[in-house]
Image 1 (tube, rainbow, N blue to C red):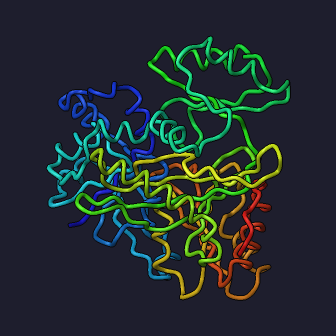
Image 2: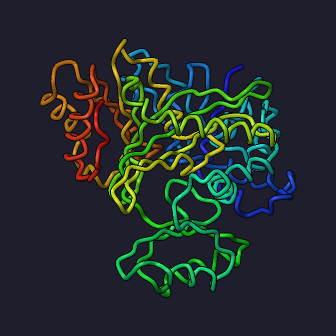
Image 3: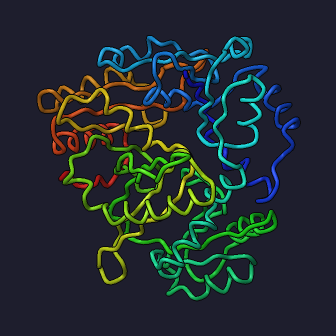
Length: 415
């Protein structure tokens, strides 16, 4: 059955607004959906679905996206879906299956509004699975979390935890119960709460909390463990996608098609992730699951693993990146790199890629993977595919691209 892809990339905000045992009335959610679909809809990242979409699928977009913007990908054999942005076009879609970034009440209401198939797990289970409270409980019970991490339910508790830090240079992070891509988090330093951080924490605690304290550690590498949980079968590993993260902690890309030597180091994280997936399946969740794992060095310089850094009961960019393996030549590997318009600084992306590609070893390809315009305005987000015959040549191309964009990324080693 053809799919309709919905890029509700901020669906965790909707999860955060409702209690664990209640969801908004479907008529009210449907009313919001009708209002939203009266004009441009979706997200500037809606084009990301091209990674897994088929030619007969449909992607809901916030404005007109022309298929010819993906000609370079089509030449490599990638199927390009249809992008639609007008409600009257949605009314014409029949016999479709809704596939959102994450399931929420408004996503279910959208499917009901257009009579699409909505294979959604129970929304209270979705909410629990995406909460940091659930992640923290697993880390605590399995002894796989960060030393010094804490769940906070009151401001005085937070002040006490901060006061116990080693000194004025101690760096730490506060996270809300729901958040995505580094949002709903704030960094702090030292043994006292400043006004900005205290006010941030107070607002989240007042909305129902809890919040979570984590010491910042010396990150070495990160990877996304991509799992599928069927309705009536055990969870299965779909793949492992090493993450590229800049020095501010912002996601910059995912590697795919990696050789076994590059991902075997993550096998302990895979085993822990599958255990967590089994628990979620028993709770009633089914669908995509992405769990981020991190290698880091402790205070003594020893290499450690945090296998459950983030639990995402939804699609992830790493999960989508695996879709590009269908255009990889045998034995090749790739990277899906993301950046903003400000990094291009008025330059032509095509000219930039031609220049970088020309300085790479033979056969390495750098391919634009995002539209230049969405409707009448320039896209705020861009993506490039790096395709290479070896991990070493892929890493050199990654480094050259990030250097040209002015983005500082500590690239994981090529293995």
